[in-house]
Image (cartoon, rainbow, N blue to C red; front, side, top):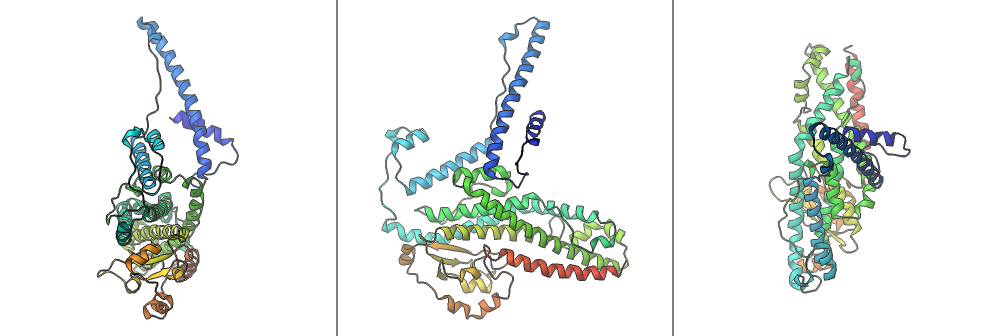
Amino acid sequence: MKYIDDEYSKYFLGTAGIQQAGTGSYAAKTVDDDIKDEIIESDCKYIEEKLQQLLQIDGYFFGYNSDDYKFELVERENPVSIELSRRAQAERLDILLKNYDIAEEYIAETQGIPVEYISKKQSGIFPAFQKKEFAKSKSKLAIEQEKIFNDSIESSKKKITAKMSDNIKEAVLKCNSISDLYKSLDVSWTQDLQNNMLIAYLVAYDDVYTATQTKEFEAKVESTVDIFNMPFEEAITYFQSKYPELWEELDTYDEAIRERFFWVKKTTDLEVTKKIQKSLIKALEEGQSFQAWINNLDDNLKMIQLGADGAYLETVYRTNLSSAYATGRYETQTKQKSNFPYWQYAAVMDARTTDICSELNNKVYRADDPIWNTIYPPNHYNERSTVIALADYDMQDEGLGVDNSNILKESQVYKDFKQTTFYGNPAKSYVKNMEKSAEEKQTQVNANAKELKTWQ
């Protein structure tokens, strides 16, 4: 395989316009993969010929006819990829069958089922007896989707935060003196964080599509794939198999996530630098030297929540994936608002529920009401609330009315919420909020640098 990879690399060294890894077009990547397949096929034939020649020599020495035997290299498919592809196709077929009339002949041809075993269900779009259950189940479905997403973050965070901690340690160890910490560290954050932000967006796309395109709901959703713990390319393939239109749209989503990641890196670099500066200042005040502080770096990082299981790093991971997920929900629901023109805020009501989520729970506003530019979740750390898209029949069956957003704006809870960093919309105000945050953190880093200079 090393020979094949070398040949592939050799080909592209002289090819203009090829994107760097992690930043290229998914459409272009498909073309690249086709070329790679051709190179692999050619090299496999070459290897088969060489093996056959060795067989001829072996037959000559041991007295048998080598023509009776033949070497053939056979590609072995990844069983995990096969299963994911089948699962995605099955889920997509299920959605199609629930929403469209498909000719029996087509189903027989594509699924390998004899026509005589296929019969149509009773037709009818959203029959009256289904409507109410459909509407009631939406809230439970959305809350369950949110829970599954948060559980997925929890299951994958340790692997990512451990890499993040290693990256921080590597950046600090490059510092030879106190003066190297006068400016922001340049941490090489793991690519997995950026990749998982894109996956979070696609999970939201899938969740919204599921909630608005199927006719029957159950208040239970089973997590079918451990999406954040599988290889990135396999996760992408899963979504593209389920939603072929993503082949054209994925580049746009990827570009938006990369822009977000630029600000994630900038603000996180500054926050990490600020924490490290403070730790060093405290050590110097206690009589330690810079080198002594470096020698005890693992413990120092742990004390300021930057260790392998550091609370700050977990917050960075969870918050940015949640923000990408919320953006995916918002943008997908916005595209569907002509059919689902009302949005309802759904909170998990228990002892942990915040004042703003309690105030907003069950509130219904039109999808085009500007209030969503300020209250679309997440509205605080560890957010569990979500937004449900409703159709006219949902409103009628549940006896819901549209709330007056002007009344909300006059409430003290909303006025207090306006002073928080979460005030805004994750899809619209993200860059603006991150720019403001970066400016504030830069000021703090500069102040710490002045204090460090007194110890030189």
